[in-house]
Structure formats: C-alpha cells, structure tokens
Image (cartoon, rainbow, N blue to C red):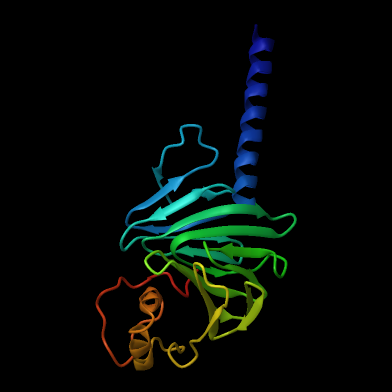
Amino acid sequence: MVVRRIMSLRILLTLFSILLTSVSLSAEEFAVATFTRGKVSFLSSTDSSKLWKTLKVNDVLKPGDRIKTGNGSKADFFYKETEIRIQPNSDFTLKEWNTENKVAKAYVEKGAAWFRVSNFKKGNFEVSTPTTTAGVRGTAFGVFYEEKEKKGYTCVCEGLVNINGTEFSKGSGGALKEGATELEKNDYKDIITKEGATIQFREKRKEMPMLSRCLPCHKPVGWEDKSFTPDETYGKK
C-alpha cells in the first residue's frame, strides 16, 4: 500500500510538473496582457463555452482570440520586444501567431491598434482592416478603421511599412475607403513631433477626424483638448 501511494504521488508530481512547464512555455511563445483599463472583453478561441470574459493582466493572446475595448478602455500585450496596444472602442482579432516561423497576422475590424514589432521576419507581421493590409518592414506603426467612413488608415511611426503594395516611411501613411481602388497618401511629419500633436494637427483633424485617435499617445502642444483619456503606458514597458 505504501509503495502504491508513493508511486501515485510521484505520478501526480510528474503530471503537475508537466502542466507547469506547459503553462510556462505558453506564456513564452505568445503575447501576454500587461495592462488593461476600463471595459476590455476577451473571447478565447480555446474556451469551449464561447463566452466573452473580462481580460485580465497575464492573460495569453493566442491565434483566434478576439479583444473588444469600450469607451476610454485599452489593453496592452507584450511578447519579448514586440508590443500590441489596442485602443478604445476597438475590435481586434489575432489571426495567426507563429514564433518559430516568425509570422503573425492580426485584424482590426474597427477602432485602432498600435504596434512595435521585433522578433518577426520583415514583411511577415501583417495587420489588416476591411480595406487595408499593412506588412511591416520596420518597427512601429498604427492601424485604424473608421466604421462611419468605412475607411482604413495606417500611419508609420518608425521604419517602413508596406500598405496594400506601396511602401511608406516614418511620418507618412496610407488610407483606403471601401469601394475605392487608389490608395490615399498622407503626411504626418509636421503635425506630430516628439513633443506631441502640434497646432497644425488641430487644423488637419478638421478634415481627418480619425486623428483624434492619436491624441492619447501624442498630447496637444500649444493647444488644449480634454475629449480623450491619455495613454499612461505609451512609451513605457
């Protein structure tokens, strides 16, 4: 009896060790939530209940998982040096994530998300909206989709990003409206600086309302706007 109990205990300890290793590897292979604010809903592709749950810090983002953020809400995910920051009023899905082959694909159905990409092959980290696809050649960029306009935007913060077959460099970006065939080219160099959003930004926003989504990360300089919630984690790890 004693021998059997010892053997059973050893088996249980072995299984427990395997489980812990599995969880550890899971966290190492995927992006993990490091920050949440407000209402952030999480639909896990591996949850058989198929119920939306509240996203929590340390939750792991896997292929097929979907994130929805409410007004004034956001979520940050990190994988080594790669960052995924999902902004307020957004609907985000991770389509593919393979760290062995260094390939990732994501989809922004509405709202905005910001990315700083490392640890992936050039061009093999793609983010799509209903009208655009951005393939990363550099490191940092933002992707937006405005439902009212039915228009997708991408802006390049660092490096190069290929948007629907056209390359854009830092301080520029592309946009495409549903039904359109020609990619709209935008220049953001004079409206967003290291200090923040300039007065020129305020004027440009009148013709491009989507720029309001940039304010949480790029605070107004020389003018005021209290309609947004500052992103307290932008520029920090």
